[in-house]
Picture 1 (tube, rainbow, N blue to C red):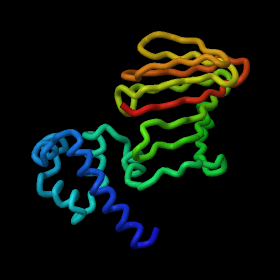
Picture 2 (picture 1 turned 180 degrees about the vertical axis):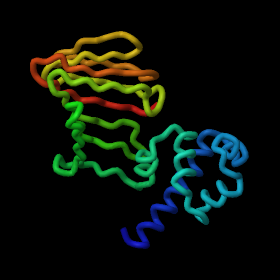
Picture 3 (picture 1 turned 60 degrees about the horizontal axis):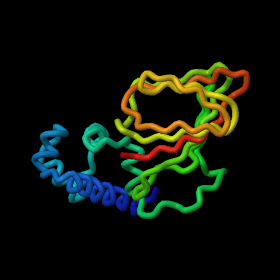
Amino acid sequence: MGRGEAGSVEAGLAARLAELRVERGWSLDELARRSGISRSTLSRIERSELSPTTAQLGRLCTVHERTMSRLLLEVETQPPRLVPAGRQTVWRDERSGFERRSVSPPHAGLRAEVIEGILDAGAVIAYENPPVPGLEQHIWVLEGAVEITVDAAVYTLGPGDCLRFRLRGPSRFHCPGPERVRYALMIVAP
């Protein structure tokens, strides 16, 4: 990244952090109280006079209920309309037998994202808490079967079935087999 791009990202980040504070109706004093960052430092960050440290940015992300990657994506001006398959990020956890493709990644101005998930037969993935409480999720099974536990209830889904809910607590995905399961996960930010 060139120097001009870095400056542009920093300016965009400063503007987005100021927007988030205003959207919530908070004064700089209120944000300082919630984040543990001094009012003067917050003011300088929002005016792009000071770049936040990783720790400060982490605290601001927590206060604004965003992952750091989502906040940084919100700094971009226009989301690309086309996300070619070859440019979609794929991550695989060999130990758990889970593969995740970011089909339509999060972006500023867009509240939803689409993920393709593949679980090997017998695989289990569990999450203690959602990254943001109240995330709306829609899980549509494309191939195979999956057992999903949410709000202490277990749902068994087969091809074509869709489960939708707001995630506020732990969740668990289990592929009972005998084949792997492939599903689309739509996430909508609250």
